[in-house]
Structure formats: C-alpha cells, structure tokens
Amino acid sequence: MLFLSLRSSLSHYRVQAVRLIHSTGGKSPGTQWKQTVQRRWKSSVVSEAGAQSRAVGSVPNSAAERVMGRWLLACSGMVAGAVILGGVTRLTESGLSMVDWHLVKEMKPPRTREEWEAEFQKYQQFPEFKILNHDMTLNEFKFIWYMEYSHRMWGRAVGLAYILPTVYFWRKGWFTRGMKGNVLFLCGFVCFQGLLGWYMVKSGLEEKPDSYDVPRVSQYRLAAHLGSALVLYCASLWTGLSLLLPRHKFIETSQLLKLRKLTHWTAGLVFLTALSGAFVAGLDAGLVYNSFPKMGERWIPDDLLAFSPTLRNVFENPTTVQFDHRILGISSVAAITGLYYYSRKIPLPRRARLAVNSLIAVAYLQVTLGISTLLLYVPTPLAATHQSGSLALLSMAIWLMNELRRVPK
Image (cartoon, rainbow, N blue to C red; front, side):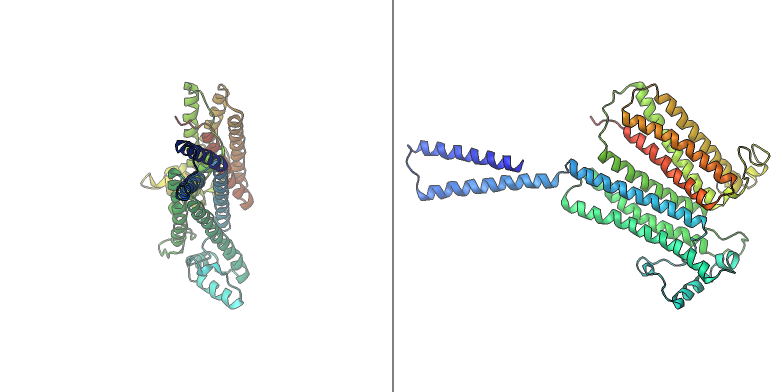
C-alpha cells in the first residue's frame, strides 16, 4: 500500500512538471525553478508517505487483532489456572500458612533451616495452628506454605501477563478507543483481585475468642474473591473471542432473539451456580449430607432453616448452602437441556452448533462430577476437577453467547 501511494504521488507531480514546461513554451526552466519544483515534490511525497505509515501503525489491522485476541485468551487461561490452584489451596487447608503480605519481599521463599523455623514460628501465633494444627511438623508446614506461595506467585504472574503487554500494545497504537477502556478495566481489576485475596486471608487470621469452630476465611470474602476472578475470566475470554472470531450474519428472527435471550439467562445461572460453590467451600458444606438425590432420609432436611433470622441460613447454614447449590446445579442442567432442544429448531452456523453441543456435554459431565464428589466425601482430586468443570461450563456458555452476538449496524 505504501509503494502504491509513492508511485501515484510520483506520477502526479510528473504530470504537473510537464504541464508547467509546456506552459513556458517548452523552454528549459532555470535552476531556481528546478530547485523549487524538486523541493515541493520531495516534501509532498515524504509527507504523504509519513501519513500513510502513521495510518498503518495506528489503526489495528486483522493481524494485530489476532495477536491481541490470543493474548487475552492466554490471560483468561492464566486466570483459570489461578482459580483452580486457589481451589486446591483451599482443599488442602493451605491458605492461612502465609500470615503476612508483601508484594516484593515475600517473592523470595525461605532457604535455610533458620529462615523456615522463623516462618513456622510466625504461623504458630495464629488460630489455625493453635486449634487445628498444633501437632504439625516443620516438613508438613513447608507443604502448605509452598501451596499458598505458589498461588500468590501465580497471581503475580497473572498481573504481569495483563499489564506488560497492555503497555506494549498501547505504545504501538494498536488499541482502539473502546479497547483502551477494556484493557484499563482488566488491568485495574486484576490488581483489585490481588488486594481482595489478602483481605480474604486476613479474615482467617483473626482471633475469635467466642468461636470454637475450625479457623477458616470468611465465606463472604471467599465468594467475593472467587466472583471477581470469574468476572475477570469472563471479560477476558469474551474480549479475546470477539477479536478472533468473526461475527455470523444472522437473520434476526423471533426464534433467534429468543435463543439469544435464553443463552444469556443460562450463562447467568451457570455463573451464579459457580459462585454458590464458594459458600460450599467456605463452610465445608460438602461434608454434610453425603447422599443424593435425598439429603439423608429426606428431600428437605429438618435443619434447613435452623438459624435465625431466616436469611442467615442462605449464607451461613451449611445445610442450606449445600441445598441451594444442588438446586442451582440441577436448574442449570435443566436450562441447558431446554436451550439445546430449542436450538435444534433453528438453523445455526457450524461453529455455533458446536458451541451448543459442547455446552450440554460439559453440563452433564459437571453434574456427574458434582454428585461423585459429594458421595465420595469430597476427595481433593475429584473436588478440584469439579471446580475446574465449573470453569469449563462457564466457558462454553460464554462461547455460545459470543457466537450469537449481534452484527453491528
């Protein structure tokens, strides 16, 4: 494109020079006239070439969009890894092993035995050791410490994966005005997510003289931490897919509008179900009523509303929390099944049809994992796989939403 622009400019000014020569009767112009024409021609060609090169560098082309799309998909994958690693950290009861938070200082782990003993002594001052792990050895402490350390270091890597490429792409001028707002939100949110993680951990380090329960983080803060991670994941995945996948040119029929609305509601239900899992984890609610489909001998357990006031049961009663998670899970599978059968009435592009089929397949796999985790009394590998399945199911729902998105007018 730049070569064509230079060639057209050259032809244009040659024509002007020939016309000027003819207008003077074909006489050879003077030296001053030659220099004037040459200066005007060179300055015009250079200015047009510079404008063309600036336009190429500042306007994102398809190749740049593909690069940014893959970057955001990689970022969403790293966020998914952080969620899974955080779940394993929670399941192994490792989250309270690091009792302070420093952005740079704690990046270097203890190396000598003296440093490890000093770190262990700090841990011994807090409720989890005093109540739950008072007979823990130094080697056992090292295991849970490294679990939490891995989670925190992975979180820092996620932050760098967002911020450093953002600075690079911004300087290259690849971001449109809308993309600038998106990436600023993502970078700001990943920093907020790190602060929220420490705010969550602090709740498990507080002394509670009136409580005889096992020390654990607040289920409210755990849900906020997981919920913000899911928002970050969904936003990154949606933006990345939007940059990589071209929109389908749908005929806007009433059936398609209904399918699109049903997909949005289903994705919201899947998100809510995944979020309710944070309350299950925070209260260890998976360890009560390890039977299915009934809870013990009843469909509705006696202690479902044991707390007062009644609203407390939804967030603080382990029985109610597990019951709600079951209902939300079953509702999600039912909604996805209905969406699948409704979509069969509509001619969809191949990629959109694949998204629908993937969604229902992952939904039934996820409910199977959930029931198995419950019946087997929450083994760590299976519980971590179930949490990973919630991310996979949410991903399929986001993918389908992206396939059905409107074509801009």
